[in-house]
Length: 128
Image 1 (cartoon, rainbow, N blue to C red):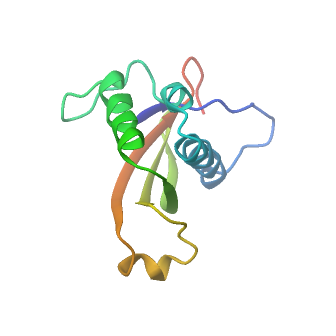
Image 2: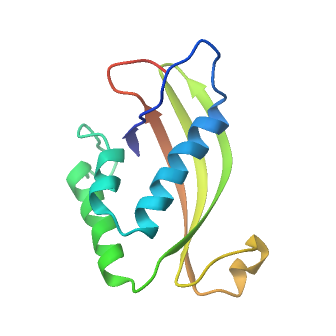
């Protein structure tokens, strides 16, 4: 997923894991708050994927999930994050559930939708 990452620049390089964790926190908060506009701001207008979906399609999928779920709790586990060229590539396991997920070992017992996301974070107009 190509996204906009709004991060302040500094002289000290920020580790890719921290940048990704900050992005995931923004996305998780937007989902938990059911704030579709906040999610839309995280997706680049130039987004496209192998399934020929654009930014509007991705936001529509997220909005449909939010509207169809009474309550949403997310659990994300960052598998990897690394700078490649002018972007940050990360792989994230995310579980969506109707109740809080306090312990990842409980995922097998919960009724949760579990996805692997391969994401690409870029700050449009600037290199990371």
